[in-house]
Image (tube, rainbow, N blue to C red; front, side, top):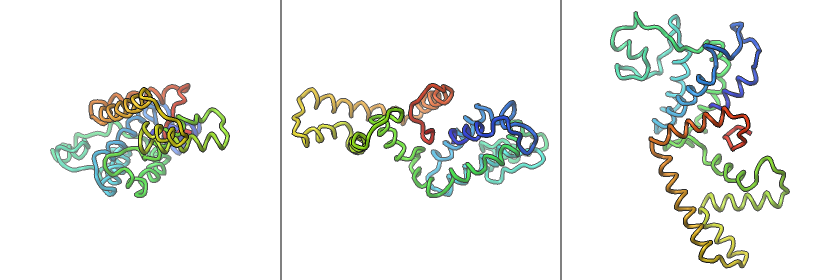
Length: 241
């Protein structure tokens, strides 16, 4: 979501939208707003267990940000006094007359990013996220492949194939897969190599468990923001190449 929105903002640049203003600037599609929309999209995936509920929450956030005092569109937002939607909360508490929309995104911008929401809310995409996974497993495999065969370094077909074989092997079985490859090449791994591979897999599993904890999600989000704000960072970003 973040990558799509940043690309949209970059593509429009100084072009005037239907309301006569550019897509960026104060009260428009700023970096902060993009991060916010990306966070909403992530939460919609993580807190739901079915494609239908994921899609509902994704579009709830879209119409929520598009809503204005003249045209509130909170029909998909959860109702009740405990809702994350302030409009629904005010409705439950009987204070709608005093409620005002302070963080709406102009309709001209929402119209331009609506196609992105349509693309990223397709059932065939969301079904891969069931189980609170926000990243397609293919993206993880791609990340591993570019680690062995960097995108910015030219490689021939032979090197690319070898890199792909190693990436798939380690993706499925971890670093210990390299020991099997060595044996197939009649290379007998020594005790140090065996211990190194085992420790690498143990460390990866340990770090994965830490990253899965809620306490580390905020840190991961912060790292992601810094990466997006650094034009010199050539690390792999899903959809970024």
